Length: 110
Image (cartoon, rainbow, N blue to C red; front, side):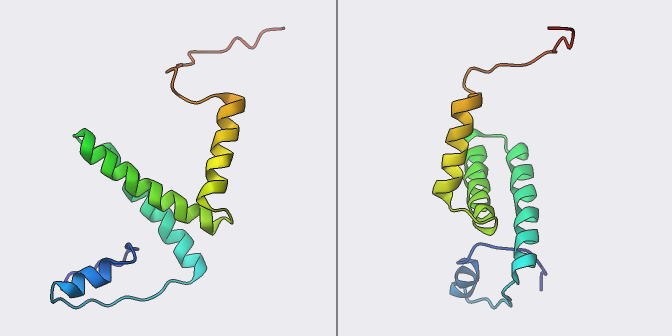
């Protein structure tokens, strides 16, 4: 019997049982949940970097976004509040659409 010991999406146990298999689960306490979300974020980002096709990359980005939304909740914000924070930063600092690559900064006297 394979052992996973990892955070999974809410419906995964149901999907496993619908295939006639059995699984054991437990509900994480808040601190474990936060740590497991952090681990899951790292896992999803690594899977994104390993993706070779655009569709696979998009799937991994969607998974990453789901984890980020859950982490926002853990840190006291919902997805809308997180997106407002993102939009505010984009307004003041810009986004990444212009593909600007900073080479260096001369720290000399102004």
